[in-house]
Length: 329
Image (cartoon, rainbow, N blue to C red; front, side):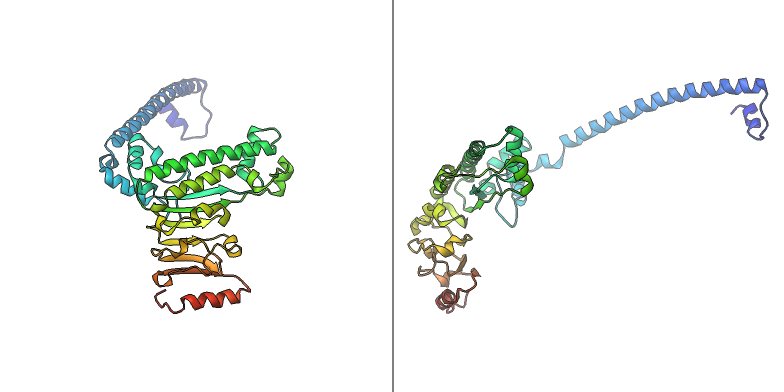
């Protein structure tokens, strides 16, 4: 530091005119030097940023995951699948998620049949568009109408049908775990007032996506001999092509679940699926007509889940009379 400035800092006296001029020159020089240092510092920061990016590229090029054998990578992919349900046809979760990371991962995913052996299939059975559909209609149509929604549903179900066919093809000959549900879409009051109420008119046969839903069920029928786990959350009417199959078409099926209220209301005793000798787990309702009177092989079951409807005492007594003798359950 300049000796004159240093002496001035020791007192509160006013500097002389010459000291003031000298100090001003020193101050200007300091600002000039600071600007040069800041430019140099900025350049160093840019250099540091570039070096860090280069280091990341080098680390990526020799990342451990690049050296994993294909079978280990495929096993890791299997561990990314949901534990408590079948995977959805969504790019936000495996297996579709891991198949879109890079060409190597895609090849690994597409050549791992077990990765595609489980699938959750939603079939549209709504009376009106869902929140997601409403957003789609609002973005694409000024005044959404029945025909707009119907076209949207048909497009969604058509794409879904194609995806399911690809999914099963990728699964190869592995055992399949399939869950099928009907998706319900409803309008909130705010959505109704904002976009107007869109109600689907006509009978069930006229509703959009019905043919695609039937085609999807028929696709499942084609793979019935690979079905190991089947969860039917659709009505018996929609599931009829599956329920009507003979026992010989379910050689691998062992857990079976019915979770739709119409299985309690509609008699489907002619369907033999519940009599399969391979079924070890059954989930149903008392007394669901689909098993009431059917030759369920209770002695084969190791897992049983039963929903008891209020006021169904007669069916309950009949049901317990059938399997109470089998202590293994």
